[in-house]
Length: 186
Length: 337
Ligand SMILES: [Zn+2]
Ligand SMILES: [Zn+2]
Image 1 (tube, rainbow over the protein chains, first blue to last red):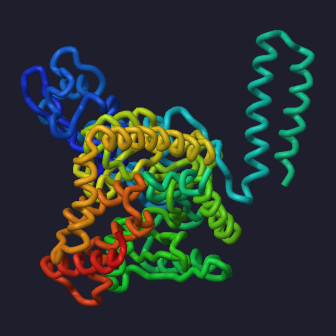
Image 2 (cartoon, chains in turn green, blue):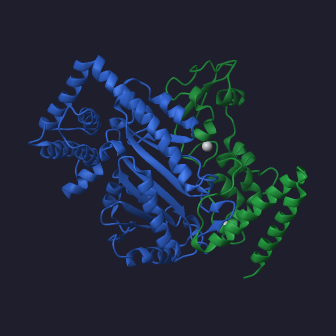
């Protein structure tokens, strides 16, 4: 079963929580969405970690939620439906934004470009603010290496300018120009 | 250090590395027509079937072979999603069954590599070898920041899921599994029962795998999974030694009782079989019974309902299955102690 909040990860267990008013809420969640999972339990669940009152993390969030919290609304909010126009459709595969938010699956490579604004916060929630550092397909390797080197150099250049190391900055600037030129060639 | 100790066979049953890949100019499987999937299966399996050495064969899963599919799921060679999907799909298996490439599951390719014991580096090396083999023939969907593009954003980046199957009877017995699951969760690993869920994991078998696939490179990911798994292995091993020392009779009775029942029972329900084999494996791993661990791991897989039924070559009712299960285990344990 998929997590009832993100609808993406496999839910690893049923989380339960008791609100301040004594109502019990439960939902199947993945570890990522459950956050401080240590305090919620599948069988003992409610009352496991003194979640009434001084609750923290997941329990506190849950306690705040209305009794029948609106999962579709939560997911829509996560996917940025409120800030992006509804009814967006991938021009290549025809996937609709509603489908993306409902099933959490993209339909093609173009979806990642087309739905980029909606997907970005989602990806950040799952993976943090990270960029790919692993291997690349054989054909993409030299270009990727160039891009990464450029990023490094630009970063170093900023540091040099900040610390007024202008000689080093000049060297870096040349190197960056040379690398950029290299990319322009086929 | 002996090989056995290096791979931590006493506690680690097996390792799996999976890479998710898609082809750039094809819709992902959930948006594909039957014809498109048909073509993709042929073109993606071609470089594998051409390659010598691994003895690859292609198996179609949409042609009524439900039982074979079920057995492959129970043996963890394919995912339940692949077995149960209504779509056009297939799997390429190597002759030694250490490589399984699922075609048109959630992604076009799910390259899986298996090994026994804790052997993440070997599995990664093998998976990457297949990745290169296919990647040389097709253009992968790739983005410089998001990495390999996958149908589900949870797999972006490396597309790598590294899992280790651990046998944790002592931690289970001590009621510590919930804490362990929470602790490894905080370290970015998902832990779940291999058969059954959570604290009801049959046979005290657990799978631990990385949650995050983007931002760390392949070596960093498997290094981290390995470190966390080793910490769990360490706790289990310490606890096993403590239980053996402080509750010698309980421990010995449990192990030998399991041996007695498994060697003589005429009916063996699945749950009981899992529990007894788990006890027996515990005793073997402590060096108290002279059986190969690999036999235990084989039996834990062999007693699963689909695998048993496939072996019988005819449909079995539950009661018949219990008899078949008892016979199967008895035969394998005959002459051994
Ligand atoms: Zn979730
Ligand atoms: Zn699309």
